[in-house]
Length: 203
Image 1 (cartoon, one colour):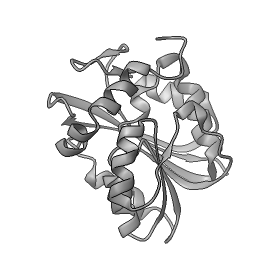
Image 2: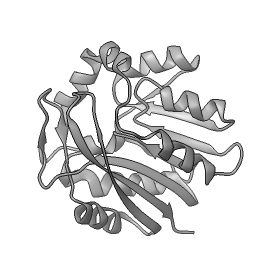
Image 3: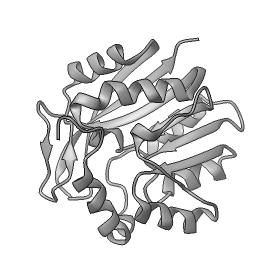
Image 4: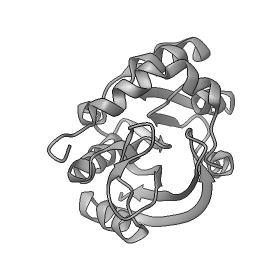
């Protein structure tokens, strides 16, 4: 696990469970954060929906007038999102992102939390590179103190607030970094403490 940039077992779960996962809905209390995230963006800003899942957040962003590039590592979820959106969804792992200063913002809800701990700093650096100078990042993580798997076999990096702050600081030059702690749950229905990360790529 620790020498990989992604966890194949987790990707296989989302491919196998794509329809059930999409039907279950989002239980992370993120709706208010999406609105606040969009409120900081210029009209028509280009957003990378990183780990777009079934596309529900991409739909909301498009309806609000933003240009959205949805991306997911799961071909199964990408197919569902494509049907919802009426447009292709880019299928790629996070370690395959090569974009340079292409996006005004990155929305990474419940996606980067699956990146193995030894690779997360490098993936955050790729996200930084993909943003335009001054671009905004939102990313959510399930908090904890050691990597592990949930009852469904999915890998999580489970950072503490301090660890997440250290990861973002080590990855690149960011400003305006804030980490919000909030309660919620997830697809497995179990109570979960979440960390919501907000950051800006330095100009």
